[in-house]
Structure formats: structure tokens, C-alpha cells
Length: 402
Image (cartoon, rainbow, N blue to C red):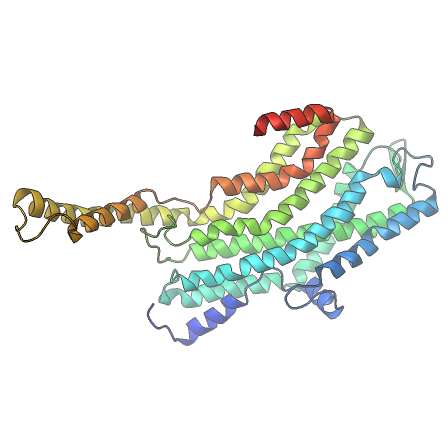
């Protein structure tokens, strides 16, 4: 690597080392000042406990106060509301835990662009500008204020009221198409649910920042090497970035499973009725995670075409010289064929050309797609028990494995 000691490169390197999608924003600063987080996002268990205490424990206490904890006169008592328990005891903790996973897995990625010499010296300032633009969006106060406004103005008043169960529950009495909230329902609608929705929307905003950053980097003229053994011109490290979002996908799978479970147990629906919803959610999440990597496909395709032309021409010159030396003119008798460096060089040339020919056009692997699809679907697996007995399910699983 040539020495790059310019001020722009030093600044770019410093910012790349500090890159994080989650270390910033008003909520992060609040957690930091409340000693619920650190600069490295530790204290995850402490944050989870506090959020559970705020979102779920008051619902338990208020539902007991309203007389709707175990049975009462409602169709869905608090104890039996799987959606509420999974949402606040499983999904919210997963959304919080996902921050640490994303932070640790994505932090080295931006630095890798520099370590692998993918950023040309002329583009140091543009690369640094992309990093700082991501920082500004991540730390934006107006954005998180807008997210809160969306939660209360749309998430609670519109989305939740149209998707809530149409029967009397521990949080609301339903009669003649109208819904009246109990005291537990007031806390649920205006405290617990908004916190959950805000954490979810905040993650979508962070994914937007990541997508935007990758798109900006893909606009630079990257220094790709067609013969790189990762078959991606040196961008192979990006293929593993998708696993940073595995916990987030599990959270979405659990959230979907909770919604479906309530409608099966209390709405008279069947699991087969939700095939389209499951498929759409799976495709949406996979596209959300893998789609951003496709922005590098044009450069990878161009590098492959150029590599095939250049290495093809180089290979053609070499094999002609090899053919002329060993077959047409005949090598000197003093140079034995066995152990000749020409044979090894011919093999190396063939291997290099094969690497270019098999170069992939996107940093996406089949195994990664299957693993992340499993992250979404595994939380839904227990719902299979609603359509077949445990014994039959076990037999089918054994039949697939063995």
C-alpha cells in the first residue's frame, strides 16, 4: 500500500474507526446520562429490565386492578394475551439487544473499505463525507421527534385502533363497534405501545441510514481487483454484514407470531389463513437486509467484464509463448520439462482467469439467505402445533432430516 498521509485520509480513517449506526441520537444520550448504557453499548440487561418495568409491569398491575388479570368478564384476560407478553417480554428486549450486535458487527466494515484499498486517494473526502452524513442522520434530534409524532399520530390513533382485536380484552371494552379503554388500556395505548413502536421505527431509520451510506459508497469508483479470491473483487467482507441484523429479524418473526397467535386463539382464525402475511413479511425483511448490497452490482459487473478482457488478453499472450516454446519451436534440451516454472505459471494463469470468470455480481450468498430466513420463521414454528399434533409434527421433522 502506498503511503497516504494526507490530512483528508487521516480524518477519513479516524471517522471510519468510530462508525456506528446506534451510538447516537437523543434516546441514546438519555440512556447514557441515566447510566443505562455506556459508550460501547454495554449494560444491555439493565436497559432490558428498565424497559420491561416501564412497558409490561404497569400493565400487569393495572389489569389486576381492573379485574381482568385472569378471567373477569372479558374474552381476552391479560394472562392469556400472548401478543402483549411476547411484544414486551421478547420483542422489546430483542430490539434492545440487537443494538449491541449491530454495533459490534458493522463497526469494522467501514474501516475495511480503507484497509483493503478499495477507496481511491482522490475519493477520500467523498468517503469521509458519506460517513459524516450518516453520523448527522443518526444523531438528528428532529428525526426522533418526528418518529414520536408518527407513533402517536399514526401508530396509536390509526394503525393500532384498526388492528386491535374486535372483542373485549383486558385493555378495552368493545360494544357496538366502539372501544372504551380501561386504566390498563390507557397505559398500554399511550405509554407501552408508543415505546414499542418508537423502538421499531427507530430501527427502520437506522436501516435507512445504512442503505443510504452503502449507496453513497457505491457511487465512488472503487478499486476492485477481479482476481481477488473472495470472488467479489475485494468486497467479500460485505457478505457477512447481513448477519448483524439476525437478532432484528428474530424480533420481527416473534412479533408476527404473536399477532397471528392472538387471532388464532381469540379470533377463530387458522394458521393457513396467514400464509400471504408470512410470505410478504419474509420477503420484505430479506429485501430490507440483502437489497442494499445490490448497489455494488454495477461496479462488480463492470470489473468482471473488464477483468475478462484484460486477463483474457494476458492469458492469450502467455499461452501463445508457452505453445511456441514447448510445442512449436521446442525448448532447449538443457531445460527439462519436469519441474519447469513455465508449467506452474500456466496453471496459475488458468486459476486467475477462472477466478475472474466465476466472480459474483453481488455480495449475497445462498447460505446467508437461508439462515436469515430461518431467523424470521423459527419464532413462527410453535404455531404449527395449532394445525397438527406434536407427534405428527415430530415425525414430519424427522422425515425431513433423516
